[in-house]
Image (cartoon, rainbow, N blue to C red; front, top):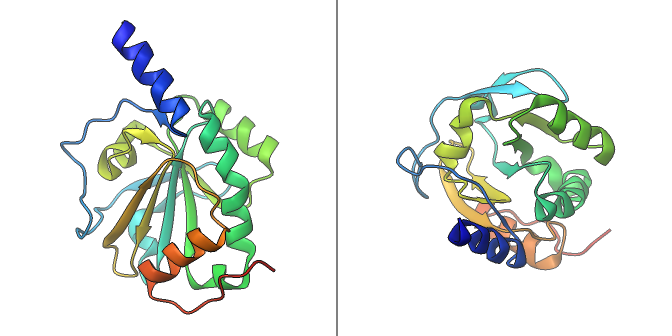
Length: 175
């Protein structure tokens, strides 16, 4: 029990929260994502494969995770930037209870499409052993990168990371 408490404490200090995900089903960088059904939180439910055809940023979060909550506004700002039209951004909540995830989304005024991770399928597939986890996926559904921990997603450094992963030429300056 002390080890678990220490692990949780160290994870929070490092800007991430521990999630108890198994990794035997994890899709590795360079591999294609498998099909998954996504239960809509602030919009309709969709199939993961429906996002193929353009790059995708998947952010895995939970309402109880402070670093997840802290980075969500920067993902919203990234989505609203002109270059945000070049890729899709979705959120995957690992909350156990639908009402907790919906309450946080209502509080945060989220406009990004958000989904509930029913049965931990996305948590396991993406290897979300710590939260937040952000996964960059190419237009064919291949994982390009996994970023553990919170970031300022509309910062010049993060924009450069996204630009390099998706090989796009958008500006790294804020509007």
